Length: 375
Ligand code: ZN
Image 1 (tube, rainbow, N blue to C red):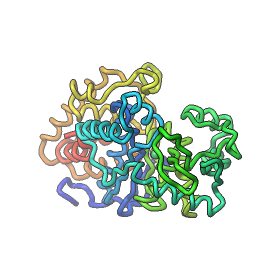
Image 2: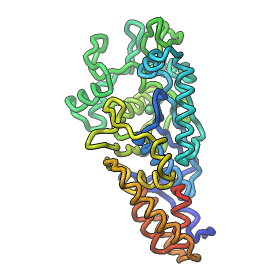
Image 3: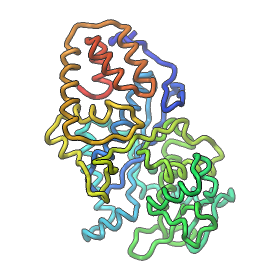
Image 4: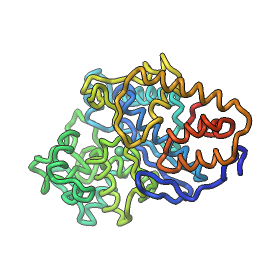
């Protein structure tokens, strides 16, 4: 027993129907931001949940290594920087700083690794060469395409579903250079004004999925314990990231568990810059405490999409007050801390853990507040 009255170790955690044995270090790859705009609640929700997942792994006795990439080579970013007359890398650094400030304010623990895509271009070239050597990619007109015809079926999508999702992310399945509509670029040629690096196929830049594949491979190795990101990244992004790493290394599965966090909606529409419905983290934090905003995100099943309603933060703030007052009570039953840990390792059941903390008070309340960084 430790000083909170809970068992030192739990042998596994359950995540989305997957039982993960607790093995140290537990490696988390968290798909990070493209630093071209302000941090909104949709991003923050995914990153707060990934933060909580790592905290629960530590509660279960694991050491954690988190890699959260920065997608600073991306056409959206290049265009946003150009519109302001800025270099893409300088503009990205500035946005990355503001994002880091928002994450710190939300008490998201700083990941052990925060690699930038532009520092891993050489590894994308290596990935492309490995895929070519294994016959899993081909080159055409300065580009290298990954053979992805089997990727949709591998994650249970029909061709029609996959085509629609790929189009949503601006992919171009109708590109005549591709041997199959589901082939995707590992490497793309760059026009003079676009960011570009030398490669065996001429000046170019990485494709998005290849960036995350090469970064994960370079930082955490050929497999990760948890692949985390917004649920909308399941396909194409995470499916291709995993397929590329597996094809290049022959090691599989790439991710022992996936952690696709539910989408945040406003009046039924996904929160997105293009929808013009952003709720900014900095605005929320100017009116509410960080713990209340974290609880708004965490006090629900992680896989479910949810609707943002401003009044709901007050409900969470009230629950926090009750927890704080419960935490002030003496000690509490050791069994409650065990039950609370059991709830958190069982698919991160935060509502049940909060209920136990509030009812039992003392150590159990302090344990849930500390684990979820709600103090
Ligand atoms: Zn990614």
